[in-house]
Length: 241
Image 1 (cartoon, helix red, strand yellow):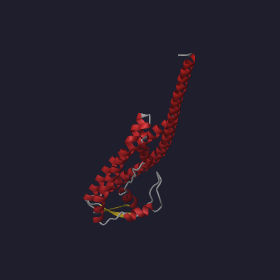
Image 2 (cartoon, rainbow, N blue to C red; image 1 turned 90 degrees about the vertical axis):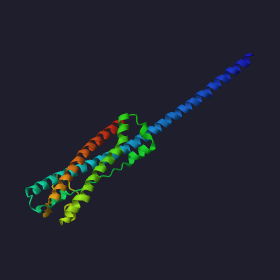
Image 3 (tube, rainbow, N blue to C red; image 1 turned 120 degrees about the vertical axis):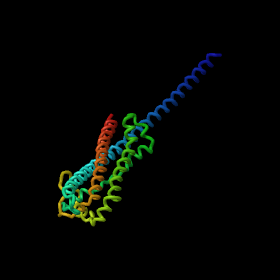
């Protein structure tokens, strides 16, 4: 082989190496850019989830306070009932009757979290504890709603019909108490008067049953609020890492 051919071969080899390196560099840049885009999208998704979890935690805390009021109301009502076991009716403040019949509500929807899961980016979260906590959250919210439905079911299928048979309607009291808007934490409910509340044995038993159900739900809501606080902290730490 002549020197010219050797030089030509070396030139073609070098040119081939440059081409291969250029291709590999381009692939590397594309992968780097894709990685940056995915990381940016994940941060945006997690920021939205963080706001949503904060809102849901506030909702759960508000419902926890409501449940605490229901337990206090039912306990106070039962004290009056038990003090007059032979009386078919007792006279109590309308707000006491209101709290004893108050019903919680909770919307389990977590749209931002659903979007994160649907996008497949949940698997991209490098923190396994955060990834696991977010993966379980929808189920935990559904469990809380199931507990709320238990309370509502007990009231509407058992307690409310019994009160109705005794000639008692909670609706007018609810309208009077809530006419001024939402009651703030620690603020006493306005008392507009007193009402005759049924005091039959069945009503007392239903009130006790409902209090037990609410107490169980209250424990679950307190635990859920703690979990949401922990998830907030995990997301915030992940976003600042």
